[in-house]
Length: 250
Image (cartoon, rainbow, N blue to C red; front, top):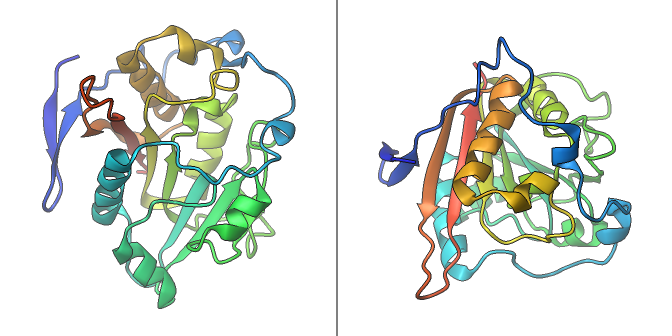
């Protein structure tokens, strides 16, 4: 893939052009059910039952991620962020943490392990233990008992989109819960639990993975889809690469 750049107020990220495999409005989703079968099909609640208080990307990637979040996540009063597939840490920057502490914004979470989310200081108890592979509806955290309405300004999902076996249903539900102009930020690296990622993920190169996630967004109705390089990988230092595939609700 060739590349260009995408600029925020102070950072320029290298952009990888995204082109859907076909027309989302005229053709079916271009992947099969077998593409989404993990090698280990045992219940996810068993696999994730023990808390893992570890980071799944290295320090350089975490620094790049926090810098990115500082520029794209809302901090204006009344904003609400969802951290989807969250754990014990969300890697949000000090600017966002401060807005949470002073009550300007709210962060809610959906994840698989109660102990991990209980430890996550940005959630402040506003989370739900939920297996999105069993129930793809984006709903149910404290204060969202009815599971209705466009209430989200932005959503993050850090190095977890590759585990979703029904990404269209999840991302369609997420779009329906997002306010007009809201955004989703799907963070991707090259580490994973090989037995639990979807089957196609392990059989394709990184550029193809990024395009596939772009297709997830395109076929679930998101617009303005971009792929950005947040951190280049290095074979010399073995540093983790980091990308974001993002989209917006029109």
